[in-house]
Length: 334
Image (cartoon, rainbow, N blue to C red; front, side, top):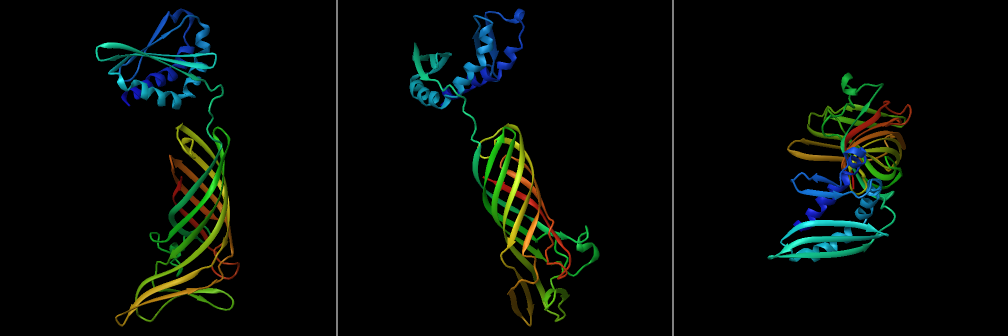
């Protein structure tokens, strides 16, 4: 395996040096060019003609396109070598010749391999399927402000009101730095009220909020709203190469989503007269049947930070407070 890694360093150094060689002037080029790798290994490139420099990148691309096959055979052939003296790689008429000079015991040994070259570079896949998961916090705005600022009864806890989503999608790379994500997911808003005695009262015409006055030891009060959603998000990718669905280390995206409510319920927990009680009731509570909004992400490797804002209100028009849900947290694509 050490020998394979050594070869990778040699070929990698050759690849990264291509642009440097292309910038040399006529007076700077000798018969040979020496390049040292980070671990002080030395590589010599022999230049017989200036035109060889122009073709050097194509030669390297042909070798890099066949690395899997080269490494697989090379590891088998080099098992008997104690060290490597020289590595020579040539691409002649779409055939790669790999010559290895090494030491086995006290003798010099030559290994000669050849492979058919892939004429076309291997482009990264343009279409990827992926799984996604959102894990963050949610709240809502009323007239551009948090209800907590006005001590409203329906104010929620900043920590503990969780937003969770899970789904799948397809990513299409329409150009090298640009992709489009189309996804579907299930998500849940959990609005945990700051005042644990908060009660959601559904009347014939609207929904109201009040504080329970029974004098119990109040433990929890929350409203949960599930949705099924679809989303559309263009993204720009940049930075160093990455594998899998994320071709680059970094990404920025902004898009839109829409969802349909699957139900809803309220839940209260309290203790009274040494008895622990849980109240759970499913109902519409005049919750809006649809949601739509905008979402932005910034990602590093397979982890994204996301922020979403519902342009629609949580409750139907004139049936409850005009609340626009927001959420932010971590998004994972894999």
